[in-house]
Image (cartoon, rainbow, N blue to C red):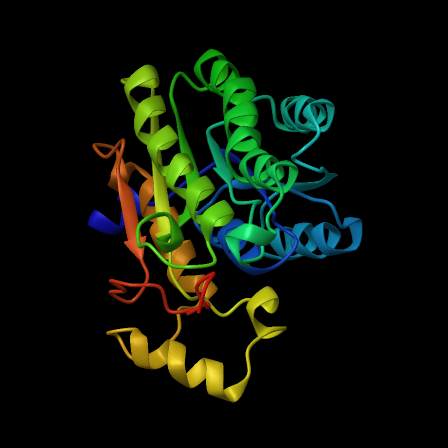
Amino acid sequence: MILDRFKLTDQVAIVTGAGRGIGEAISLAFAEAGADVAVAARSQEQIDDTADAVRQRGRRSIAVPCDVNQDDQLEALVDATMAEFGRIDIVVNNAGGWRPGPALDVTPAEFDAAYHFNVTSAFALTRLAVPRMVETAGEGCVINISSVAGRHLSAGFAAYGTAKAALSFLTQELAQDFAPKVRVNAIAVGSTLTSALETVLTDELRAEMIRLTPMGRLGTVEDIAACALYLASPAGGYVTGEIFGVNGGLTESSLKMPRAFE
């Protein structure tokens, strides 16, 4: 049965930024496909809720508080996963983000921080987890959550767009390093309805973002989770080094920001 190729029976996944939004949706999708999940984020309350939801789907879960900017906490996340489950099959580097703003208002320190949050942290966790994957499962999969901001040029996204472009390129580089044992892919996310977006989404902004999206709607976290499930499962077993666009067909930024000298 072709649907059997989308199962993750008894595999173990680490998902960062799993307390809400895309990370939570991916965690639950993996659980429904048969995986146990280590959910990680800074908010203990949020990851406890996600872990409970995974267990309600009949799978095991641990909630590990983790700031991905801290190397010791990434090490603790990998160690906790190994201690609880004895293996790692999948890592989803979902934690990330950065506010848009005029390039001249971004300090070099802030630029470095955006890069570290979106790129270096993903590299650090991947570097820690991949040897464990090969040792325990014999193979594995890494999925990085990138963005259309790393594909399409737009004012106001010098820090975030550059970081996501780097994350996408890192994905392709690591796919070459780790083949054939570990596959590495990314998802270039478009305008997706998350709690973070809802905080800034006015009726006018929503209408404009929808107008600029060829599919005529904003994305859902389940849209992203479905792609992540494909990439993590045997169905995507011949795919590595790819950046999958799950963004409604966007060919430009759906969030317009003023230029520096307008």
